[in-house]
Length: 256
Image (cartoon, rainbow, N blue to C red; front, side, top):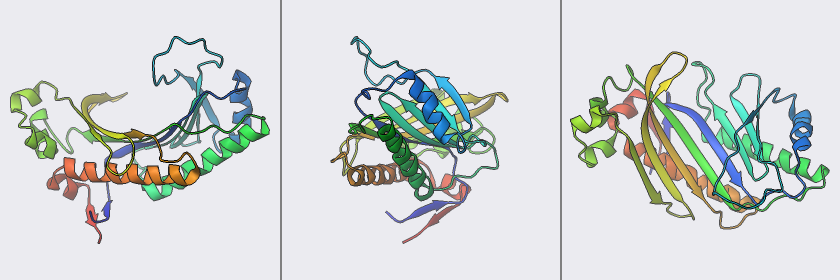
């Protein structure tokens, strides 16, 4: 597939995630100590519900807390939990533009390395990565990419290929598909869901592509290769799932 570049892609969030066994020795105070070390870059902090990968009835030795640390503009976010690390880029204002994978990826690498160094100073062993995640979230707005749900056949090739009728589309179209990841361990999930953007209640269709899996080796090179493979899979599925008219609207430029 040729190199792809969109001048105005509908991407509103990109998520790099790592999962690992629960950090031994990680305690509630570490969330605050860590914030102290990154506060110049991430002055905003909030507590969120923990991410639960698999239901468990085991006795928890580490508090299930997730903290989010955001930069002043809210575009860059680090999320930390006792068994997860995430780095997010978000479109916080209409003026924000997607900076490309090759720009976001080094920022994720930098923050993951900084977190590992923090663990070392706290005498906590750096974890072995058991699972990786890369997610792209796209918002297609009513009045831009579509007017009614019946228009989604002009937006998504997968709507045409699955022979989804207009009456089905008018009943708030929801679509989900999971496929094995080619060239790496894992799977890619494609989801299309209607939604509302608050506080304006703007109608959107959210188009989400998520790749999850285990790197061949849990070292930096193995993790790096996994994310590059995941990004290629997302890029390919985004291109193939959407129509040429949408590519034109988003300013597609194809390289060699």
